Image (cartoon, rainbow, N blue to C red; front, side, top):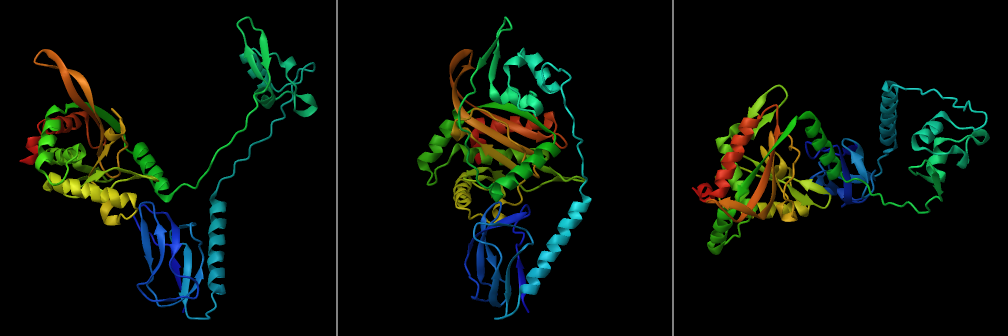
Length: 405
């Protein structure tokens, strides 16, 4: 008996997938465990595995096309088996669903407005007259395109460019000639999911922001000494991750989640690290970051960043974050705010290190400052607890030997 292959839900946020490429073609023999196709989800390109034996009788989606989760994409069965009834039944179900959705929609009818100017000497719509009055435009200079030569809003906007001078003299310029052009490309699954999830976060979580400056002089010197002997090159981002994990251990409320009917305080620390890729942003996770050395964190960040750029991340690489860091310092950004990554209570936005005059021992001397901004979900975190966390983070980064103890 023929078996329908539907688009599976390959991640918790996936709503549709794109068939990157079919690895089997119609007529091929398929065994359970064979890979049928590669599917691009909102976060990675993953393999679609067959759970049935038989012949691939039907492929319903071409390479590059998107398919909603649970829609039919292929049929596997016995050679020569008739699949027309299956496809017809599937189409009928779709039509019935569309009809039900249509019945539920409310229809709003907008009445037509007969907009005829009362001015018999000059035919113009009330809206055109209002615009002309506000802008000091002489309507006698405008040619109407409406019924009977009536001047409408479009005539004012499209046919002339009118500049009103201080003495109310109207200067009519010829219409600017140019060609409008643009490119359009389909929105990727990743970009759709980023848009949806961050919009939900921004509008459902009441954000507030607190910013702090951190003196990076000791951190710069400490990193230099570490890299003189370390086999793995340590970045400032690695140090920030390690210091953040240590600060979260002291301030567990920052490492919590608001789950509608309950508040979860996480005892484990899984730090999401935002990574820019071609189609948007991915957030792979450094799990149990507080238990890992700087070298371990450095190697893991590099590995996850490469997997993200090559679309090789697996669900285990991005699920379960308890806190997120977004660092734009390497792009020359001094300071910014970030949208909280669901289901975290906070996200840390890290700017670049800037050489700045500072006061030290009563004298103005050159220094290196870095600004960090904590976006907080006000349902969980208040100003005092957020500030206390940043103060601890500042102390750890300004004296980085503390994170090595």
